[in-house]
Image (cartoon, rainbow, N blue to C red; front, side, top):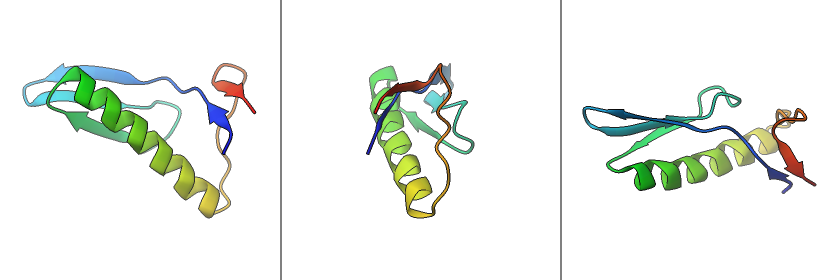
Length: 69
């Protein structure tokens, strides 16, 4: 799999932390701590990309979010 770089937004809420990736529709998670949310987001992005590739869908890869091949 190629290496990608995506933006991640992590926000604190009353239950812990909520994280999402603006470039990948429907890619979001949560965690009790900031670190949990970040690790969960890494896993979520990986699974999201695997699913897209398995279904022949394109991965958004503009100049601002594609790191290396």
